[in-house]
Length: 179
Image (cartoon, rainbow, N blue to C red; front, side):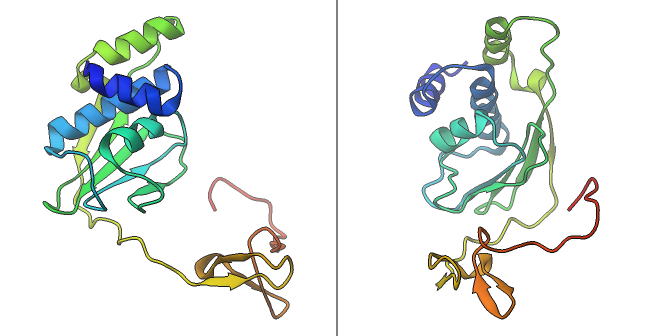
């Protein structure tokens, strides 16, 4: 285990937990398998498929953050993380495959931190383009509540430009497994 990674992630996240340990280990895997360091800007991009504790480790350790636009949330509920190195074009997806196998929380956390990354993750190289760079959108004032929102989040409703909070979605169909 990389103790400095663990300490930095715990400081950022606020406590130790198995989810944070998963994030620390995926960062170790990214550094090892992709030969990258922390992102200064958007040269490294991560798509996370969950919003669990491990995402904090990714922000703290490899510099992928929502604010910079190089951390993208695709909510599948999976412990999967895809990284794109814009400098080299290399892209990899890491899927956490290790199961708890009946051990308690503390023992599971220790196992994650001490196990080699190859034991914890399935990973594969991706043959895809990296996501586009983060774009800046002008703010548009909602004609109902008066608050401004990014242009790409505004909807047209009854001839008015409205924010997502004020927008009344029209749906007569029962929602299924995908949007």
